[in-house]
Length: 349
Length: 109
Image 1: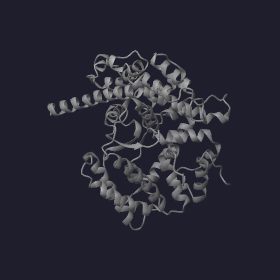
Image 2: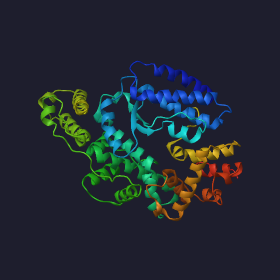
Image 3: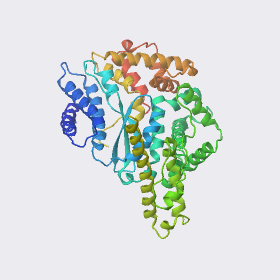
Image 4: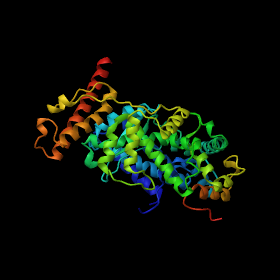
């Protein structure tokens, strides 16, 4: 529909959202600023160009979707909590994670709030804008309470970091696709380089869990125009985790260095969860690296239990019961760690 | 999908494209910051095309992306030939550059 009509509709919905009683206070500032910007654009005289209004309306629509998602009390808090630490290692700017549950099997993570756009294009808007930036996460609704199944978000974070810093684009600038490769395959090869980067990025945080996730989703997936075959992706991840060096890794490390970003390296510590999980108790995680390490530990424990060599409680349990219990234990372990951190912060204050 | 929505690739150069779209549409006004962004991305990309190793943390990410696009496509290089900034661009040039930026559609010229 016409972007000005969309903005009118979004304004109404945002007003309702601003009055939601359980709304996250950290997001109120963004909601109010969005309302102010929309009001400014709708009443500006002379009007802003329709193309600017259209692009703004798209951004407000997207932001509205995620702000709304954050009011439903359905957001997967634990995975958000873990990702916050990973994000802070790559972005210097203060970021707020907002989540929308998706009905499809769709994980995504992207920046898309309208503030840079407003600063760059609405030259008559003079009010202050929020200093923090919103990061939008999409998690399949079916997985909202299954954090171990959300490892793919670390892969998506890899794409996000890549896009923010143009890491693989830098690598392609310095080391283009071999001229010997036929021209028609270049676009696919470039896309493969992006996928491998995101895989290795994820491996830095969740280790073998990202390979296990790929294997679980579609072990036999062949090459497509956008993605390398699953087996090739898993092999590359395993090589990285084994500490091997290879040409693509060198491309990425060089590009990261040139862009002033951290290097790809393992940033997790696998916690010894067996004793606690065997007793159906959450494990006490120590430090940020163990938060990320919960994922490979959980996947290993899950595999052992499903294949019949798990704890007594798993004997006779169905596959789905095991999956739910192990994910529940992982979820509670992460949540307890976050509560301890909040307690420590308040205690120190 | 009912109407075309911008892909992530298009979003990467969105401000660069938007400046061109405004000129292409005959809009009399390109916002100052948008103009500055366009000029900076173009000048940095030009340097990177000549010397890819000139990438530093200070280079705007979009400039890296545009530099690669310029290296890949002679149509884009030709369309931007002799252009120092948005002030040099008229609707015809803007249209040609936009067509050259889009990987799926060749210029109608």
